[in-house]
Length: 123
Image (cartoon, rainbow, N blue to C red; front, side):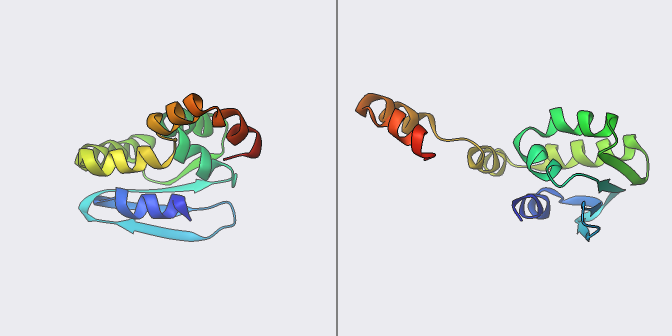
């Protein structure tokens, strides 16, 4: 769900068709631009791409977990880099902050001694 939410807001230009590991097809489309389709063969890949897209895109492509169904690898990368450049700094920061705890919260927990308790309990 979070992966789909991200792509819905990320693709502002072009068309990206994603076929997930269950075979569900979702199309993300903005203004006219590059067109690419990909297939994800591993359900874990959606989370991996959210956490570190530039690492996992290459890894998944090389080991066959991300397959280019329409277009070329260059078309897909063109679509990604174009849309990344269109993201405003505020929107990009919003997505980056969703995936990691704030430094202020970390320091507050560390100072109050609640960091270790929160870590042990998964908070």
